[in-house]
Each structure stands twice: as structure tokens, then as C-alpha cells.
Amino acid sequence: MPTGTFRCAWPCCWPRWGGLLLTALAGSARIMQLRATARKHRRADHRAVQAGAKDSSKARR
Image 1 (tube, rainbow, N blue to C red):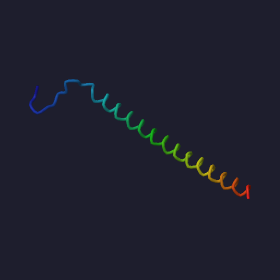
Image 2: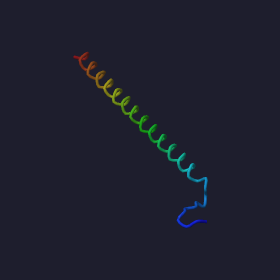
Image 3: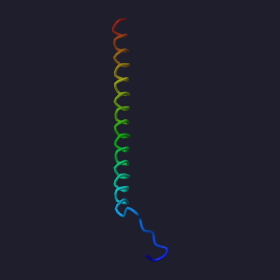
Image 4: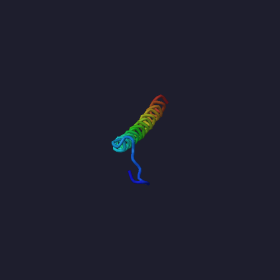
């Protein structure tokens, strides 16, 4: 073996790490997207409840 060359003990491990990294990035992006959507829906539900409470308080008067 010539000097100065790097020979990996597991020659097929680099594609595995690349695939694992891509999968982890895609999964975390999807989780962030789902959390943002859930946060948006929670805010909308809270606003609807607040608007309903204001309407019912006006109806009682």
C-alpha cells in the first residue's frame, strides 16, 4: 500500500452515514413542520374560544 493513502476499515460505511444523516435531517424538518402547524391550530382554537366567550358575555347583558 502506498504511503499517504487512507484506507477505511469499513469501505461501505460512508454511504450509510450519508443516508443516516439525510434521514435525520428530513425527519427533524418534518417534526418542526408538524409542531408549527399544531401551534397555529392551537392559536386559532384559542382565538375562537375567546371570541365565543366575548359573544356569550354580550348576550347575557
